[in-house]
Image (cartoon, rainbow, N blue to C red):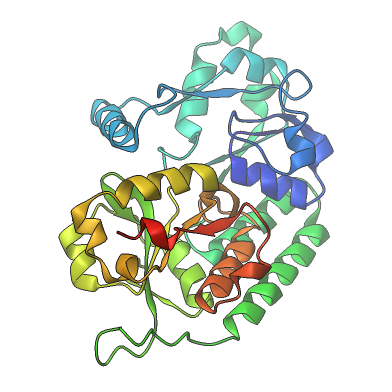
Length: 326
C-alpha cells in the first residue's frame, strides 16, 4: 500500500505499526523515528510547508497564527502536484487543530488546483483524518490506521501494549505536594506551559499524562482545548510545578523559552520558580503529538515528580538550574 502521511504523529503511528516502508510522502515536520528521518528528502518526498517565517519569536508566531485564522488562511500548504504524482492509496491527516498540522480541507484545496483531466490516484485515495483529543482517542486512531492499512492485528497488539504501560505508570498513585504547598492541598499540582508568549495551558491528552504521573493539572481539562492565561491567574493557582513544553518544539528550544520567561518579575514571583521546580521538556517527542510516545511522556513526568529524573534518557527533559531561579 502507498501511504502519504501529512501529520508527524500519523507517521509515528504508521512506523510503530511496521508500515514505514509503505510511506511514499510525508510532511516537513516528520522527524521520527530516526530511521525514517534519514529518508526524508530525495528518497521520501516532503509535501507540506508552513506559511510562517523561520525564526519568529513565540509572540510573533502567536500574532501571525491569530491573523491567519481571522483571515481564513491555512497555516500550512500542500504540494498538490507532487501529491498527485505519488499516486497514494491512503492519505493520513488530522482534523483537530489547524495550527498543528494539515487538515483535510487543505488537501482538498491543493488538489483543486490541479486540472481535472490529470487528476488520478490522489483524488481516489482514502483520506483518513485522525481526531484524537484524549489518550483513548489516540489508541482509537492507532487502530483506525491499522485497519485502513490492513494490519488489524498489529494495531490490536500495539494498543494493548500502550494501554498496559500507561496503567503501570498510573499505578504509582498520587504524588504528595511539597511542604510549601497551600494548606489543605492533598495532591501535587502542575502548570503545563504549552505556549510561552502569551502563556497557554495544555489541553487534550496532556492533563491525562499529568494524572497518570500522579499530579493534578492546575488548568487543563481532559479532552479540552488549550487557552491563553494571564500570569495573574497562574499566580493565583500557585502550581507546585511548572513544565515548559511549547507545542512543536524540542528540549533545547523549550529551555531557551523557559530561560527567557524567568527574566520576567511576574514569573520570578511564582513559588514553583522560587523553589526550583521548573522543567523544560521535549514537547515534540512526548507531549505535542498524539502518538505512541505519549506513554513515554507520562513516564517522564512521573520520574520528574518523584525525584527519579536521573534515570531519564538524555535530551527529553531538563531542570532550570537553581542559579536561574532569581
